[in-house]
Image (cartoon, rainbow, N blue to C red; front, side, top):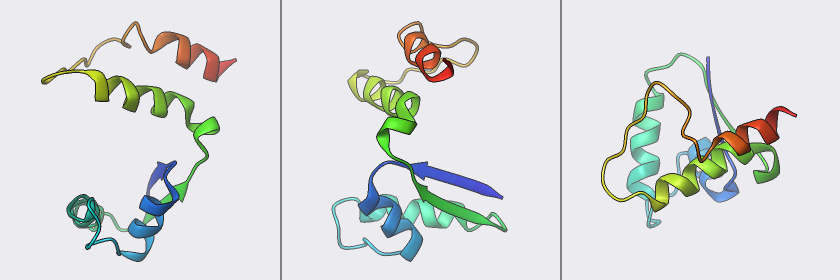
Length: 88
């Protein structure tokens, strides 16, 4: 089973109901649904941004990065405070 979580209700609902093809992000919804179809059990859940703080911080950080940036080994130094906040 794979669980996808997000804090945008409209996107999660579009994924659950396989709708949104006419929206500006319809191609992304379609791609996610295609990729999700390889799993036997898939669940899409709405999670309030307050409870999804680290993922929200990562998304905002990624949005500000120009070009391709990949970091596999270590946690990015700019994210450490968010992770620590989430732990405690």
